[in-house]
Amino acid sequence: MAHVARIPSPAFSSTDDNDEDDAPLPFPAALPRSDFLASEFHPAAYLSALPHRHQTLEDLRADLRDRSSAISAELLELVNANYTAFLSLGSELQGGDDRVEGLRVALLGFRRAVDEIKANVARRRCETSVLNVQLRRVRSSVSRARAMLDLSDRLSALEERLAITPEGQGQTDESVAVDAEAADDDDDDDAEDTEGSDADGLLGSPPARLLQSARECRRLQALAAALDAQHPFVVKMQRRLSRCRSTLLLDLSNALKEARGAGHGGHDRVLRYLEIYRVLESPREAVKALRSH
Image (cartoon, rainbow, N blue to C red; front, top):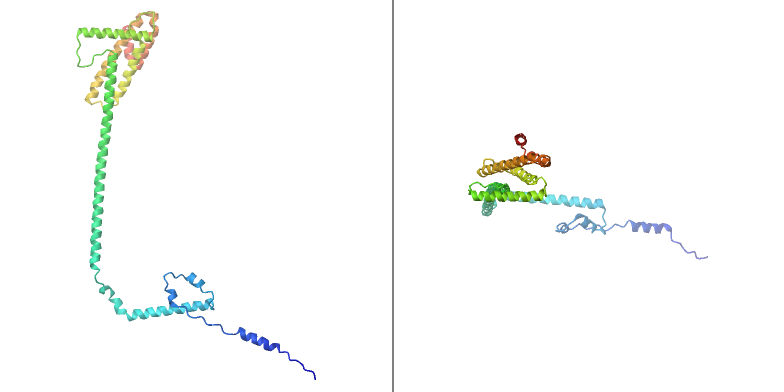
């Protein structure tokens, strides 16, 4: 009888595999409380450091909830056990009154210093405002003084050009004659420079010279009008300016008379003299001069 080898049944092999799969997993140990007390504890970093913990997320949540409940219970027991100490905590504090008083005194001193600084700033602001007003007044006075000096200097030059004797300076007959002769020489020189060698032989002031004086007189009148008319110095300058204008109109009238007496040869000069009357804004004096001559 032949020997037949026995083949193990497949049922026994599958049973062994199922027994291995159903073997219980090792239960994870409780998380130590010291891990949560670390000074650099971070939840995400802590959870990522537990990759080999055989525990589902729901079990981990339940574990953490239980731990939180246990901590709350412990805290409640601690508070109940020391309830009397908690109530008397405010009355048992000692030794802080001196420090509080020191801080209060320091704050009062600081406030006083700040108030003093504010008062100094306000006082300096007032002083600065007053000084600024004074500075503006001084600058305005300096500007007016410069304008007055400029007016005086230009008036002196105009008086010299018109051969007017300044106020307060007396002259002898000889000096007057010398000045008149010098003025005539100046007129002759100006006539030679401006008119050339005229064939008409007119000796009156040349139109160019009178026109220059008239324009300067008008500029000085505008400068004087911009100043304080009640100022004594300005009043004196106005009198000098009036003398210059009167002298200029007299010279202009004499020159116009001589030009009209020259006939056709002085026609151009007559027109130029009339133009000078327009510069001086003296149309009445022009009409008067024409009628009288």
